[in-house]
Length: 475
Image (cartoon, rainbow, N blue to C red):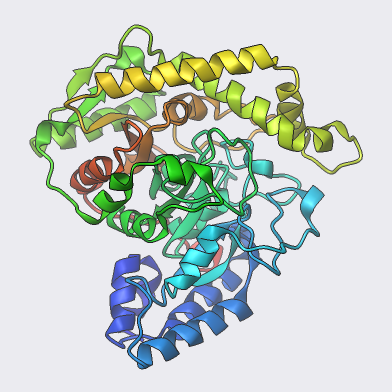
């Protein structure tokens, strides 16, 4: 292994891929390194299923191919984790629910096929909120992933892709795949101090994944930096006849990912605070102002962006919840209505509430969505990305009724309703030493420009990459 073995788990995916290509480490050694860390940290509960035997077999295959001069892709041999909503034949895909605890997948999702086709190694499935219906990351029926930044207080890991965020933050995987229907990639990224990227709908196929909302579901990566998120997305992106959304997306959205561009400093605007859909706590507001100060010192002075009168971010957050709940009931309403099913009462109530939404209200929300998307795209002309807070507060202690992190959804859901591409970036810490974050938004299809801007800002917002003290977790 390389001399920097102790820091191996915090190297980014591209560094690890380079080490494998240069024969400084084998894929098997690297995979075993992560598997050993996962085994030593059961208290973090990042994984629902660890596929150690499969992972080592994949790593051995990657090493044999490389020895034969056949690398399958730029992340050949690099381990990755997947959310427990992704089907992988022969493994359990519970969707975070005990109602599916014994359901073994008979198919493999398109994203899993693409990961393996790139020579990557799948470590296992990560924990999630039940049926992806919640942003705190809480799951009392299967077990809640622990936010690694506090070993004393059980704080929110962010959801619904909670285990994916914890796995990357704690060095239990260099990359992870999550899903974002109402902020579910960006929330765990924000609360765990990593990068979480929500692509435009249709960029990555959802075929073979457990659904929540056909209108809103998107898959996206959690990573250590923007470049890793961009590369993994580039490898997974492309049309798929089994997901119609991928056929509607302009091919430029995919091909432009391969061509990073240096953006002018005025390409980023800032959502005017009067338009924020939630107010920030004093701690979060202080972190936001500190981030603004770092941007100004680096020569970035984003102008205030005032949305058109019809574009209320608070209303769009509510509309996103309406569409999500209505469509979720169509999938899981029968389960929620069955009192014998072992659902968490909080998630059961959310699903059941979707059954009380009228079709006319749902259709009206969809009409507003189309109008909002067009209005946003028009208003953003000349601006590549819009900067705004990603959370109203850092991770707080979990509460039984799961209401303490409601502000998180208010800030994250508008991007989903707009069909926007969005990314959460680390941006300092609160007074308790818990991560804070900002997000960038761009109209649907503007992924390449958004990622260009994010790459330029990430080292300004977080000049030194920090990691949690993991000694209390046995790491």
